[in-house]
Length: 318
Image (cartoon, rainbow, N blue to C red; front, side):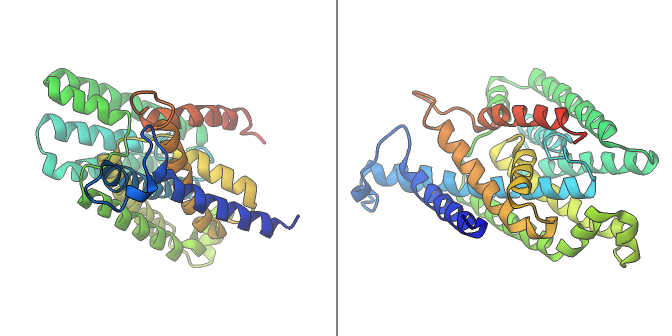
């Protein structure tokens, strides 16, 4: 069967899954009541499920495209916002804002936590010429432990309400609190997609060889810093709104690379779309198999991502 035909069928099935996911959940809804503003089905469908599906799609897309760019810039197949400690840094920023009651600027603290982690990686990469994948992962693990310990200190300093907010936040959730947060996620996700598409030629050259990219006139530092700054902003906003949702940026790029077998510049749109689909499906699992309550979506993605991460480590020489 033609591979293009298979991809078209997969795309159609994916769109159908995204469309029907709003109708599936622990509570059955009557499709004829979703346009009746006075019914409970209307509130469940339009106020709870549709925002979750939209948030899931754009957060998954944002994290997936971030994983692709991190893997390209750092030339490390296991780089992602989660494994490098970027998401942990953003989580610490949110925890700081919760404890010190600076909730109006929570996204700013999340961004600072994310971008500071990227700066640490870049600083070490500049200082250590042989900053290989093992060193990068070890630094990411060390930073994750540091942020986790700092978060524990914040939990110790917090009251009961703040402790619950932090613990619930660290598990990840797509229950977006406001329409403004949802709109912000949509805008930043589309903006990041456009920026990455703008630099797709440079990303292709960076994957080939840094010296070759330099000879082709690519300002490697400017491109890398611009992309990392924009991605850190996006990750900061996403984490501030949904909490740390791990391994999406690691799993999706590798799956799409395996299926499409194309260069990075041609994988940007597929990774963006299927990253969104992946998180929508994870959210569907989280809110249908949890019995009387939803399973935190971060738990679902971590279960799936942990196995893939181990697989990548075992097969990294290949």
